[in-house]
Image (tube, rainbow, N blue to C red):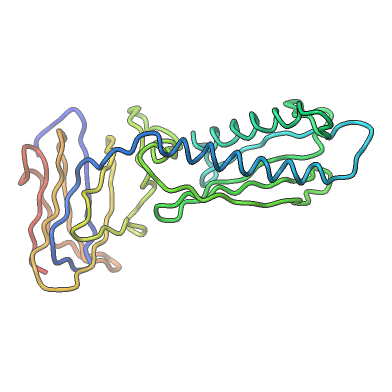
Length: 254
Protein backbone atom coordinates (compact mmCIF):
# COMPACT_ATOMS: atom_id res chain seq x y z
CA UNK A 1 0.00 0.00 0.00
CA UNK A 2 1.23 3.44 -0.81
CA UNK A 3 2.07 5.64 2.15
CA UNK A 4 0.37 9.01 2.57
CA UNK A 5 0.22 11.71 5.20
CA UNK A 6 -3.04 10.25 6.45
CA UNK A 7 -3.77 6.54 6.10
CA UNK A 8 -7.51 6.02 5.68
CA UNK A 9 -9.60 2.87 5.57
CA UNK A 10 -13.08 2.68 4.09
CA UNK A 11 -15.05 -0.56 4.37
CA UNK A 12 -18.21 -1.58 2.53
CA UNK A 13 -20.56 -4.21 3.95
CA UNK A 14 -22.40 -6.08 1.21
CA UNK A 15 -25.68 -7.97 1.28
CA UNK A 16 -26.04 -8.08 -2.52
CA UNK A 17 -25.75 -5.09 -4.80
CA UNK A 18 -26.78 -4.60 -8.40
CA UNK A 19 -25.50 -1.17 -9.37
CA UNK A 20 -22.73 1.31 -8.71
CA UNK A 21 -22.28 3.69 -5.83
CA UNK A 22 -19.47 6.02 -4.84
CA UNK A 23 -18.20 8.54 -2.34
CA UNK A 24 -17.82 12.20 -3.24
CA UNK A 25 -18.95 15.68 -2.26
CA UNK A 26 -22.63 16.40 -1.69
CA UNK A 27 -24.50 19.57 -2.61
CA UNK A 28 -23.97 22.35 -0.07
CA UNK A 29 -27.16 23.92 1.27
CA UNK A 30 -25.98 27.03 3.10
CA UNK A 31 -27.81 28.77 5.93
CA UNK A 32 -31.21 27.10 5.60
CA UNK A 33 -30.48 25.11 8.76
CA UNK A 34 -29.94 28.23 10.88
CA UNK A 35 -33.27 29.66 9.74
CA UNK A 36 -34.97 26.43 10.81
CA UNK A 37 -33.36 26.58 14.24
CA UNK A 38 -34.29 30.24 14.76
CA UNK A 39 -37.94 29.72 13.80
CA UNK A 40 -38.38 26.50 15.76
CA UNK A 41 -36.68 27.73 18.93
CA UNK A 42 -38.72 30.94 18.88
CA UNK A 43 -41.93 28.91 18.64
CA UNK A 44 -40.86 26.64 21.51
CA UNK A 45 -40.03 29.68 23.64
CA UNK A 46 -43.53 31.07 23.15
CA UNK A 47 -44.98 27.78 24.34
CA UNK A 48 -42.73 27.73 27.43
CA UNK A 49 -43.55 31.33 28.31
CA UNK A 50 -47.27 30.66 28.08
CA UNK A 51 -46.92 27.74 30.51
CA UNK A 52 -44.95 29.87 32.95
CA UNK A 53 -47.47 32.71 32.77
CA UNK A 54 -50.24 30.31 33.80
CA UNK A 55 -48.41 29.32 36.99
CA UNK A 56 -49.71 30.73 40.29
CA UNK A 57 -48.28 34.14 41.07
CA UNK A 58 -45.89 34.48 43.99
CA UNK A 59 -44.24 37.39 45.74
CA UNK A 60 -40.98 36.94 43.85
CA UNK A 61 -40.36 35.89 40.30
CA UNK A 62 -39.64 32.27 39.43
CA UNK A 63 -35.98 31.47 38.87
CA UNK A 64 -35.46 29.79 35.49
CA UNK A 65 -32.24 28.15 34.32
CA UNK A 66 -31.16 26.68 30.96
CA UNK A 67 -29.63 23.20 30.91
CA UNK A 68 -27.98 21.06 28.22
CA UNK A 69 -29.35 19.72 24.94
CA UNK A 70 -27.11 16.73 24.29
CA UNK A 71 -26.77 14.34 21.36
CA UNK A 72 -26.22 10.73 22.49
CA UNK A 73 -25.02 12.08 25.81
CA UNK A 74 -22.41 14.36 24.22
CA UNK A 75 -22.39 18.10 23.70
CA UNK A 76 -22.86 19.26 20.12
CA UNK A 77 -22.81 22.72 18.58
CA UNK A 78 -26.46 22.44 17.57
CA UNK A 79 -27.46 21.80 21.18
CA UNK A 80 -25.53 24.87 22.30
CA UNK A 81 -27.15 26.98 19.58
CA UNK A 82 -30.61 25.76 20.61
CA UNK A 83 -29.95 26.59 24.28
CA UNK A 84 -28.53 30.02 23.40
CA UNK A 85 -31.56 30.82 21.25
CA UNK A 86 -33.92 29.82 24.06
CA UNK A 87 -31.90 31.91 26.53
CA UNK A 88 -32.12 34.95 24.24
CA UNK A 89 -35.86 34.64 23.65
CA UNK A 90 -36.61 33.83 27.30
CA UNK A 91 -34.56 36.82 28.46
CA UNK A 92 -36.69 39.05 26.26
CA UNK A 93 -39.85 37.54 27.72
CA UNK A 94 -38.53 37.93 31.28
CA UNK A 95 -37.94 41.63 30.65
CA UNK A 96 -41.52 42.20 29.54
CA UNK A 97 -43.86 44.07 31.94
CA UNK A 98 -45.63 41.72 34.35
CA UNK A 99 -43.35 38.75 33.66
CA UNK A 100 -43.24 36.24 36.55
CA UNK A 101 -39.81 34.77 35.80
CA UNK A 102 -36.15 35.68 35.76
CA UNK A 103 -33.29 33.86 34.07
CA UNK A 104 -30.40 32.91 36.30
CA UNK A 105 -26.97 31.33 35.87
CA UNK A 106 -26.55 30.76 39.60
CA UNK A 107 -27.08 27.37 41.25
CA UNK A 108 -27.64 28.92 44.69
CA UNK A 109 -30.35 29.30 45.57
CA UNK A 110 -31.51 26.46 43.32
CA UNK A 111 -33.62 27.54 40.35
CA UNK A 112 -37.34 26.84 40.47
CA UNK A 113 -37.39 25.47 36.93
CA UNK A 114 -34.94 24.00 34.41
CA UNK A 115 -35.31 24.05 30.63
CA UNK A 116 -33.33 21.23 29.07
CA UNK A 117 -33.64 18.39 26.57
CA UNK A 118 -31.86 16.32 23.96
CA UNK A 119 -31.22 15.91 20.23
CA UNK A 120 -32.28 12.70 18.48
CA UNK A 121 -31.37 11.73 14.90
CA UNK A 122 -33.94 9.88 12.79
CA UNK A 123 -32.73 9.55 9.21
CA UNK A 124 -32.59 13.05 7.73
CA UNK A 125 -34.61 14.54 10.59
CA UNK A 126 -33.22 16.05 13.79
CA UNK A 127 -35.78 15.99 16.60
CA UNK A 128 -35.09 18.48 19.40
CA UNK A 129 -36.87 17.70 22.67
CA UNK A 130 -37.37 20.59 25.08
CA UNK A 131 -38.70 20.09 28.62
CA UNK A 132 -39.74 22.50 31.36
CA UNK A 133 -38.92 20.75 34.65
CA UNK A 134 -39.83 21.81 38.17
CA UNK A 135 -36.62 21.24 40.10
CA UNK A 136 -38.25 20.71 43.49
CA UNK A 137 -39.82 17.37 42.51
CA UNK A 138 -38.45 16.82 38.94
CA UNK A 139 -41.96 17.11 37.49
CA UNK A 140 -42.04 17.76 33.74
CA UNK A 141 -44.52 20.60 33.37
CA UNK A 142 -44.19 20.77 29.62
CA UNK A 143 -42.53 18.58 27.00
CA UNK A 144 -42.40 19.61 23.35
CA UNK A 145 -40.32 18.76 20.31
CA UNK A 146 -39.27 20.34 17.05
CA UNK A 147 -38.30 18.49 13.86
CA UNK A 148 -35.48 20.01 11.79
CA UNK A 149 -34.63 18.84 8.27
CA UNK A 150 -30.99 17.83 7.95
CA UNK A 151 -28.81 19.93 5.66
CA UNK A 152 -25.07 20.57 5.42
CA UNK A 153 -25.18 23.40 7.98
CA UNK A 154 -26.96 21.38 10.66
CA UNK A 155 -24.90 18.29 9.85
CA UNK A 156 -21.73 20.21 10.66
CA UNK A 157 -23.24 21.29 14.00
CA UNK A 158 -23.95 17.72 15.09
CA UNK A 159 -20.30 16.74 15.37
CA UNK A 160 -19.70 15.99 19.04
CA UNK A 161 -15.92 16.14 18.95
CA UNK A 162 -12.84 15.93 16.77
CA UNK A 163 -10.44 12.96 16.76
CA UNK A 164 -6.83 13.24 17.82
CA UNK A 165 -5.68 14.64 14.46
CA UNK A 166 -8.19 17.52 14.66
CA UNK A 167 -10.25 16.41 11.64
CA UNK A 168 -13.97 16.89 12.39
CA UNK A 169 -16.19 13.81 12.32
CA UNK A 170 -19.05 13.61 9.84
CA UNK A 171 -22.75 13.35 10.72
CA UNK A 172 -22.96 9.60 10.04
CA UNK A 173 -20.76 8.62 12.94
CA UNK A 174 -20.56 6.62 15.02
CA UNK A 175 -21.01 3.63 12.73
CA UNK A 176 -19.62 0.11 12.92
CA UNK A 177 -19.72 -3.30 11.28
CA UNK A 178 -22.72 -4.11 13.47
CA UNK A 179 -24.41 -0.79 12.67
CA UNK A 180 -23.57 0.21 9.06
CA UNK A 181 -25.08 3.03 7.05
CA UNK A 182 -27.66 1.90 4.49
CA UNK A 183 -26.51 3.22 1.10
CA UNK A 184 -29.07 3.51 -1.72
CA UNK A 185 -28.13 2.35 -5.22
CA UNK A 186 -28.08 5.17 -7.76
CA UNK A 187 -28.37 7.85 -5.08
CA UNK A 188 -26.05 10.82 -4.68
CA UNK A 189 -22.50 9.98 -3.56
CA UNK A 190 -22.00 9.89 0.19
CA UNK A 191 -19.84 12.66 1.61
CA UNK A 192 -17.57 11.52 4.44
CA UNK A 193 -14.91 13.18 6.57
CA UNK A 194 -12.21 10.54 6.88
CA UNK A 195 -9.69 10.91 9.65
CA UNK A 196 -6.64 8.86 10.56
CA UNK A 197 -7.54 5.26 11.35
CA UNK A 198 -11.20 5.80 10.39
CA UNK A 199 -13.40 2.91 9.27
CA UNK A 200 -16.74 3.73 7.63
CA UNK A 201 -19.26 0.93 7.11
CA UNK A 202 -22.02 0.70 4.50
CA UNK A 203 -24.62 -1.97 3.70
CA UNK A 204 -26.31 -2.27 0.30
CA UNK A 205 -28.92 -4.80 -0.80
CA UNK A 206 -29.46 -5.79 -4.42
CA UNK A 207 -32.78 -6.31 -6.18
CA UNK A 208 -31.38 -7.76 -9.44
CA UNK A 209 -28.29 -9.33 -10.97
CA UNK A 210 -25.48 -6.99 -11.92
CA UNK A 211 -22.00 -5.68 -11.09
CA UNK A 212 -21.36 -3.88 -7.84
CA UNK A 213 -19.07 -0.87 -8.30
CA UNK A 214 -17.93 0.80 -5.08
CA UNK A 215 -15.24 3.44 -5.16
CA UNK A 216 -13.87 6.48 -3.35
CA UNK A 217 -12.81 9.86 -4.71
CA UNK A 218 -10.58 12.51 -3.21
CA UNK A 219 -6.91 13.19 -2.44
CA UNK A 220 -6.49 10.36 0.04
CA UNK A 221 -5.16 6.81 0.18
CA UNK A 222 -8.17 4.57 0.88
CA UNK A 223 -8.89 0.85 1.08
CA UNK A 224 -12.21 -0.91 0.47
CA UNK A 225 -13.04 -4.35 1.85
CA UNK A 226 -16.19 -6.15 0.66
CA UNK A 227 -18.01 -8.56 2.98
CA UNK A 228 -21.07 -10.76 3.09
CA UNK A 229 -22.56 -10.09 6.53
CA UNK A 230 -22.73 -12.86 9.05
CA UNK A 231 -21.00 -14.13 12.13
CA UNK A 232 -18.21 -14.13 11.25
CA UNK A 233 -18.49 -11.99 8.12
CA UNK A 234 -17.13 -13.51 4.90
CA UNK A 235 -14.58 -11.33 3.11
CA UNK A 236 -15.15 -11.33 -0.66
CA UNK A 237 -12.68 -8.80 -2.03
CA UNK A 238 -10.23 -6.11 -0.96
CA UNK A 239 -8.71 -3.26 -2.95
CA UNK A 240 -6.23 -0.48 -2.31
CA UNK A 241 -5.39 1.59 -5.39
CA UNK A 242 -7.54 0.44 -8.34
CA UNK A 243 -9.38 3.76 -8.47
CA UNK A 244 -8.13 7.22 -9.40
CA UNK A 245 -4.74 7.88 -7.82
CA UNK A 246 -4.59 6.25 -4.39
CA UNK A 247 -8.36 5.70 -4.27
CA UNK A 248 -9.83 2.23 -3.93
CA UNK A 249 -12.33 0.67 -6.34
CA UNK A 250 -14.13 -2.66 -6.30
CA UNK A 251 -16.17 -4.36 -9.04
CA UNK A 252 -17.97 -7.53 -8.00
CA UNK A 253 -20.71 -9.62 -9.69
CA UNK A 254 -23.87 -9.98 -7.61
